[in-house]
Image (tube, rainbow, N blue to C red; front, side, top):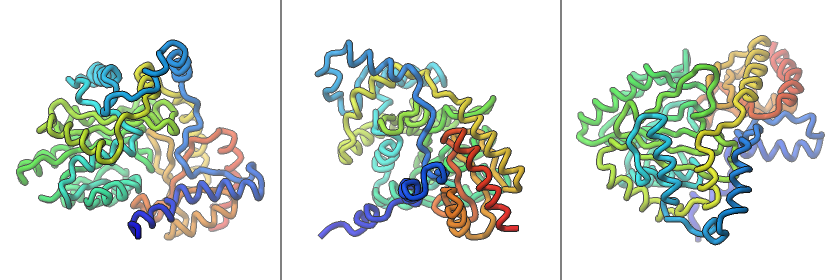
Length: 394
């Protein structure tokens, strides 16, 4: 016998992964130049030079046993201290090494945090559109995920609906900004309104409601757009961070959990994080990559390449007549489908070689996601297909 729910999760890929696998197969059949794969958020911009330099330096100069051996379960002390010091310097906090838990990417950060907080059947709240694995991660802990519907005029948080979603069983709120899949950055006014609600509701129900800030795209913003650092707006904040996008290292699976220095019961929550990491087998994140990120804390990939991609696809699709949400961050474009059923729209797009993801699993029926972290040349080559697609609806 086996766990039927786990069997289902292992047998059925996510919509995004299914489309990605279809694209690889289709490229073999018709040629890669006739397939325009916008399915996966897999950065095409190379990692900053400091990453390869750090790897070479560590492999050359550090004792091999120390480099490739176990660190402490929660991560190397010096790495955690360096990250805490960087956060303190950048955002005016007072974190220390024992505010940080090193993880195998943002997914592990979220799974550990949810496991640490959930006492059995707690509820967690997120805001549509949202990364669909939040549901999987939450339910795996025995919790329930409630979704606040989209505020379609600007894709900020509908604070009225948000307040309605909070109740006595609410243990935490997962917020993702810059947002996957919309690319929207939540404004300071939005964050102030949301955290004021959480403060009031925490007092009303007599227990803290934790704000879980999912931040893999924090560094990927355009122009002078600012991403509010949630610890500076709400004491009971836990940050789940990943270097997958900020250093273009998705396959290396390295990130961290950071607990606010003003978190209620902070030492007990940190112990629960350590315990959840132990229970899930997420101890001792990759040793080499821990030390690489320590050396590259101030580095980012070439954001200008993403901006050029964004401007090309956003401006062109808008000129064709598509309705697109303007992305201020990340590398996704959220587009309104040309019929009510976004799945049918995306199926029609597939016939033209365009692999785009329907928005239903993001909590956004009627929309689709285009991941533009691809080559500029591929976007240019895909544009006639996008034009043919919209013309087929006229």
